[in-house]
Each structure stands twice: as C-alpha cells, then as structure tokens.
Image 1 (cartoon, rainbow, N blue to C red):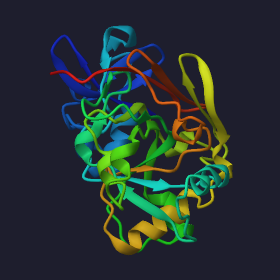
Image 2 (tube, helix red, strand yellow):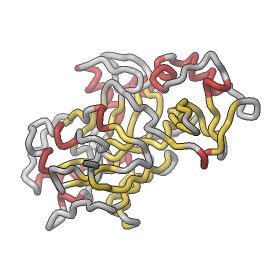
Image 3 (cartoon, rainbow, N blue to C red):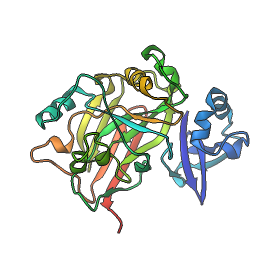
Image 4 (cartoon, one colour):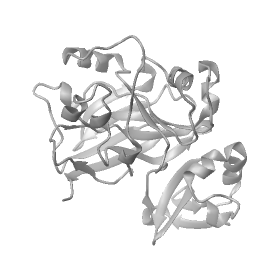
Length: 289
C-alpha cells in the first residue's frame, strides 16, 4: 500500500493510493482511525483492514484534487544517521569533520517535519542552507533490543526524505541538532510505501535534483551501515515507537562540500527521487516575517 495523510476541501484524513485516486480510509471503514500514528500503532490487524477497503465501494478523491501532507505529521522521534555513504564521509573528512567507526546519529526535532510539496524556509539568521537526499524508514512496531536479523519485522514502510541543513548552525552544536531542526527543514513523503511492496530497500536508486540538475545520485546498497544494523543499534539505546522516522544517510554531492560552498537560494527547487518509492519537491522561500 501507499499510505497518505491528506487534506481536501477542509477535510484532513488518512488514505491509501489506488491508481489516480485517494481512498479515504476512515470514511470508507468507520472502524479505522483518522490519524497515521493510530493506524501504525494498530499493528497488523488495522493494516490488513486498511488493505481490505474496497476502492470501488469506498469514499475516494482524485489524487490531483488533494493536498498531500507529511505522511507522519507528528512522530515521537525523527532520527538521522550521518556520513553513512563512504564518499560522503570522505567529503566530511576534507572539511575537517572527524568520522568515527561507530554509527553517528542526531535528532531532527519533530517540529521540522514538513509536507512533501511544501516550501522550505530560508532562515532569517542564515543563508547556509543545504540539501541532503535520503531514504526514510517508518517504524511500525514498538520495539527494543531488536537484532539486525529481526529488524525488518518492525518496519512499517519507506518514504522520501530531505534532511535540509543549516550548516553554520549545525556547527554551533556538537550534536548537529540545531542546524538540522529549523522549521520546515524535514520534508517527507509523498506517502509511506509499505514494506511488503519493497523487494529490497538496499537496492533503490536515489537522487537529488536542484532546479532540474542532478546533484546527488546513489544506490542505497552503498550504505556503510544498512537499515537493519541501524535499527539494531538504535533499539539498543531506546524504545522505538510506531511512526518514528529514521533518515538513513545522504550520499556525496552536498553543497557544503563544493569549493566554494554552493548554498541554496530563495527560488531554488529541490526534488528528491527514489525509484519505487516516489518523489518530493520543495521550493525555497524566504522565512515569513
């Protein structure tokens, strides 16, 4: 399934994509919840009920008429791994960043979550705005101490992510969190592709285009630490909850690594594409006063 959070004619709901239609799940089956977190928290039972909703008998809207919102607008966590592609780690070293042998994780505060086609703000306090195309993972089960061998069983699905970064503010905190958490700098979407529809999440082609020009391109099989290792590592420390978001790393080609750095400008359009998942597209605008 492709699961969405959407709004249409003042109505906010969750749905699934069938062809060029959005099936409103709770309007089609009153036993289904109205939010993505509730659906994911309901586990296999609710997910099967959502699959069973008959599009021809349900309440539907043309996809072209709805606004796709962030699929998970209010996750409890938005965690991202740094330097998880070898060439990007090499870029970091050239910039004087120490690259440890262990996994490097940081928080994107959840207030940064943004829709798949919504504008990204150029902060009033910085013009060091940069892009990072990533595959996002959505956790589907509450879990702790998950082995890498069992990690796939706790994944609800996958989405497209852009870990937009404010680089000068990123340097102000050893955890990188400040520069990763400005409002609107976490666009995700356009939907959650459930795990059963992705044969191998480590064989997906990912690319970032800025104003139509390819800036980053990689296959997810080139990750240093694969998704299952990431989940095992994180769940050693903390309980992962349904709806938690994991950004699995960006490849080389980020603007900060260019000489001189190539920062995003107001009016630039970022488009992240992942084959088999979809794309998101966000224009940079001045932060509103």
